[in-house]
Image (cartoon, rainbow, N blue to C red):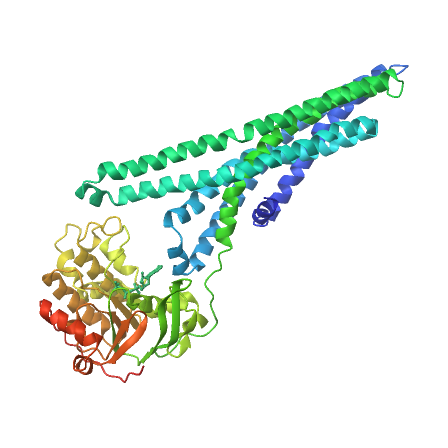
Length: 584
Ligand SMILES: Nc1ncnc2c1ncn2[C@@H]1O[C@H](COP(=O)(O)OP(=O)(O)OP(=O)(O)O)[C@@H](O)[C@H]1O
C-alpha cells in the first residue's frame, strides 16, 4: 500500500510536502497546549505554587488553542487540495497513458472494467483519501510528539503505553488480509453490475425483439444482488478487528494506570507524573483508535489504487524515430501473430504490393484477413517478422505517424454524436468548407443530407444511430476522402448493404481508392476480379496468391470459393484498373 501511495504522491510532490508540513505544525500546536497542561499539573503539586506562572501557562494554552483553530482550517483546505490535485493528475496521467496503449491492449480488457478504473477507482481514491489522510498524518505526528513527552516524564510507563501499538497493528494487519479478498470481490461485483447494466441498455433492442426482457433482467438482478452481498461483507470485516484493537489500547491503559499507582505508592513516581500519564494516556489512544479505522478504509482504497497503478504500468506501444515514408508499398515479411499466447492467427505470412495497387484478402471466416489490416494499421504489433510501409517497419514509427498514413472503411462505422458536417471534418480538422463539401459530394453524402431538415448540419445521434447503415458508410467514406491518406483499408464495406446503397457506396469507394494503395477484405469475390493481387488465406497461412484469372483457372481454395459464389448468384462485377507488380 505504501508503495502505491508514494507512486501517487510523486505526481504532485510540492503540494504533498506542503500538506505534510502543515499537518506537522498543526500537531505541534495540538501537542504544546497538552504539554503546558502538564506544566500546570506540575506547578500545582510543587512545594511553592507560583500563581503568575500558572496564569502564564493558561494564557499560552488559550493563545495556542486559537492558533490551532485558525491553522486547522488552512491545514484542512491544503489536505483537500492535495487530494484533488493528486486525483486530477491521476486522471490526466491515465488519459495520456490510455492514448499510448495499443488497440490490442484495449481489446484485451473489458471496456467496462477499463472505464471503471479511470472513473470509479479514481473516485474511490479521491473520496477515501480526502477523509482519511489528514487524520492519519496528524495522528502519526501527534503520537510521536506525545510519546516523547511521556518518555521524558517516565520511560517505564511510556513503554507500557506503547506496547499497545504493535499489538493493535498486528490485529489490523490481519483484518487487511480479509479485507483485501472481500474488497477485490466487491470491486469485481461493482464492475460486473456496470458491465451488465451497459449490456442491458445497449442491447435493449435485441433483448426486446427476442423476448429476453425477463431473462436478461434476471442476469442484471443477480449482478445487483451479488454487489449488495459483497458490499455488506466488505463493510462488516473491519468492525471486529478495530474493536479488538481498541480493547488492546484500553487494557494497556489499565495496565499503565495500575503500574503507575504501584510506582507512586512505592515512591518511585511523583503524583504530577502519575496525573500526566492518566491524562496523556487517553490523549494518545483516542486519535489512534480513529486512525486505525481510517487505516482499514485506506486498505480498501489500496485495491482501487493497485488497479490504477497496474493500468498505468501497462507498457505503452513502442515507437521509433523513423521518418514518415515517402512511398507507400506494403510488405509483410514472414509475419507471425497471435492474440492469445499459443493460438497462432498468422503463421509466416509474406507478401509485397507496390504503391497505388490493390490487394484483396480472401479466405474462410477466421483465416486472418481482418488481422492483416489491423497489423498494417499498427493496432497490434507482430510477434515475429515485420510489417513495412514504404520500406519502414511500422514499429519504428510513432503510432500516430502510422495512423496518419491510413484510412479505414469498415462495415461497422462509428460516428460521433455531432453534425454530419463535423463528422466529415474529423477526417482533417484544418480542412476548408469547400474541401468538406467536395468530400461529401464525392462520397454521395449530399444526396441524402439535402433531404434532411438541417442538411449537412443535421445531427447524427449517438454512434450515428439516426442514419441508416449505408448513410453512415458514406459519411465515413467522406471522412476518409478528406483525410486523403495514401493507404486505404476496406473491410467488407458493402457486405451487408441493399443493392441501391451498394451502388452509392461503390461509387464513393471508387473516388476514395483513386491513386491509393488499397487492401480490401472481400467476401464477394466478384467485386475483386480486377484486383492487382489476391491473397488467399487459410488458417493463418497464405494458401494461394495471384490475379483472379490465374486463381480461378487452377484447382484450389479460391476456385472452390468462386464456384460456390457462382452457384449462390447475385454477384456484381466492379471495374478497377490499377498497375503494379506483386510478389509473395
Ligand atoms: N481480439 C481478438 N482476441 C482474440 N482472438 C481474436 C481477436 N480478433 C480475432 N481473433 C481470432 O483471430 C482469428 C482470425 O480473425 P480475423 O478476424 O482476422 O479473421 P477473418 O478472416 O477476418 O474472419 P471473418 O471473415 O469472419 O471476418 C479468429 O480465430 C478470431 O477468433
